[in-house]
Image 1 (cartoon, rainbow, N blue to C red):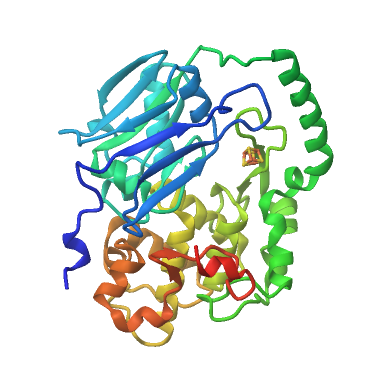
Image 2 (image 1 turned 60 degrees about the vertical axis):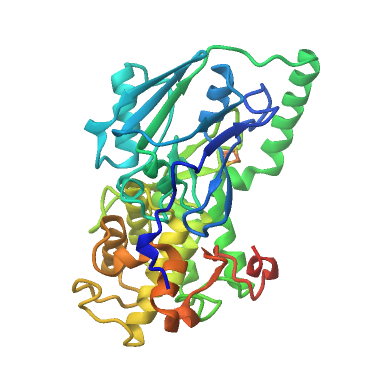
Length: 394
Ligand code: SF4
């Protein structure tokens, strides 16, 4: 059998296609979405991922419907796109930078904070198959898009446009926008107040919360990681995508304790998988782990699944401290949660194997397949398939 490490996540032949839709950037609510299509290093199949933020609208305003990146740069590179022009710049000085730091560096070099930006972190540079692309605090998360950019030596892209997107009937569009904003204010108030964390309690009560690597489906400490904990003790501010009046992104900040200063946009999936599925009831640790994934450029869902797998293998005695570089990888241990994510980002110890994705782990250790929850190499999201049947298929 061919070992996982001998297969490069992406080749010169793999295109990385970012494309907008007809409504992206139009003056209507939440016209923020754009897509990534490429070959997935994680599943090794087709990858289509969508993302919010400000990048898609800016790309459109800069005069482009899509951006197709082909081939591979000789040196680490970043792109500047502005009003019909594309410029290649050296990213050699950005190597090793965390995702947000790289975006700040691009904007600093441009002397303009109004650029939208995307970037990969150290995980993408190291071709970790779980690497995501950070886009203005949003993400092309699943499937390893960050490793595709890494394989092209593309550290990031910044874009700004001054154009307008024409519509056939501007007055009617304005009318629709006004009605929609009013409707969203009434119907999505809880989304604004609590974000997607509001789903933690109902999913847990339904018995669909993945717990301790999907061994059970109800977390006994659900009330320590729910939307009220986020809202009452950690909420720092809301985050809104382009033209969105809902602003469902809630930035959490740890104000005291060993993780003081940690800051991340904690969503339902991140909380569920970094929390209950790793046996973690310490919300501050979840925020810190979320930030570490974001900074290193590791998708939180896939990264958390890798951590919970290690915890189960460790508990069953199938791996030891030698594999984990001394980390006591017990369920519920914040130190283990943080430590294993670091191993993946650095490709050290068992982290090097986990960086090959679930298919890579199974290729090396087929006897572990019974403990790995995935569909065609894509780890499960935080809706247990025993309740959400469709999640067992996609
Ligand atoms: S802020 Fe939330 S609701 Fe608004 S566009 Fe972004 S993801 Fe959607």
